[in-house]
Image (tube, rainbow, N blue to C red; front, top):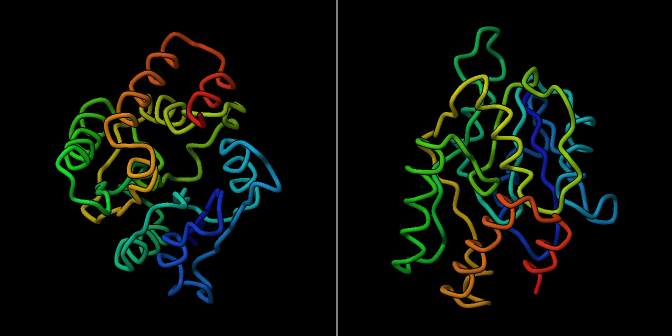
Length: 206
């Protein structure tokens, strides 16, 4: 079985719904939605979702991303194999806006962050074999996907599957592309300096 876990934040984020519409009644897939009413931080929602799941292969599906049907079918097939080559990774990232700087961010995320550094952000839609999960994520407000990557890459470098994870550029368009790029850069510096995640989240929200 493939377990698809979505840490839902706002119901108006419909991309994940488009990904899952063909899999609602499948016996080889379980879909677990964990809403903000159950846990505030995304890390908590991912922890809850994992412990509710039963699949041998787990997919953490970003609520603002959309996967093609073939991508999920591929994971379902992989989940049935006893000896899987597929251990963990994500899908090729692309924004739903073709602004040149957003294209650059996706390029960096795919070919530098994932393939070189071994870090897979949640908007790539992170998949992993169940046995890799040895302990829950820290209850941090941001960068829980980076924490997960640090843990998993000690075992094996992530795989980038050739299916597209189409992600909403809503936050960039709402806040301004350059402003959001600078903010993301400052957040990463704050994370490396180990500033409190609650402060970084406040900055992110502001």
